[in-house]
Length: 213
Ligand code: SAH
Image (tube, rainbow, N blue to C red; front, side):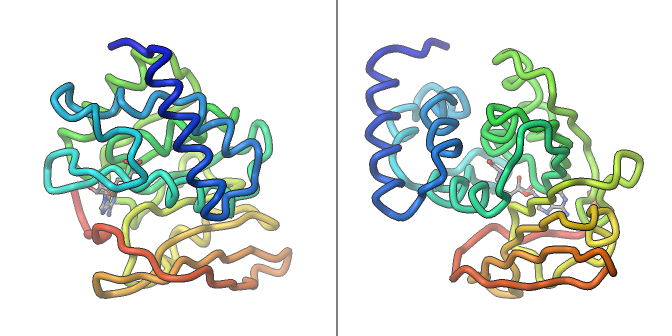
């Protein structure tokens, strides 16, 4: 797989487009400019890689829309070296964006095929600070907790308590919450006393967060 000037040009266009739609965090825009999204597509479909649209990636799942990835990442207010837990590895694109921003990423996927494929792609791309787990995101990954930030990239019917417990005080969890096809983007910040400050950021549509492997 090659990253050509043409691909870079298309990424510059995409960055302009999502900036126009409201992404202001320069670090996030830079990561979208840096990470070749077409590497996450089967070769027959790479023409679609720089549209601001979600796309099917097999096993009935999708790679999230670039704007949505950037929007959730912006809400995380990332700092270099942050330890991040991602629920729903999927294609691995969101994990790559986080790693490009110098995070240490722990990512969980329940589909074995996607778990394998995303790992292969990201290792080939040279990301060393991503750890992959096959499992149920509802359980989180206690062994490496607490996390500075947690991001859920599938539609969760409710905010999972287990994940709240694995978050550091001061940290954020960003998740699309809702039982139906539309979810509300929420960010909860954990206070020192263990309570949460909650904010909402509009409606999105994700594939559902499903229990079990
Ligand atoms: N972050 C991904 C988005 C993929 S779509 C990307 O950048 O491409 C959401 C993913 O969440 C799907 O791959 C789906 O299989 C996964 N998922 C759904 N429920 C899950 C659960 N309980 N635990 C882990 N992954 C889950």
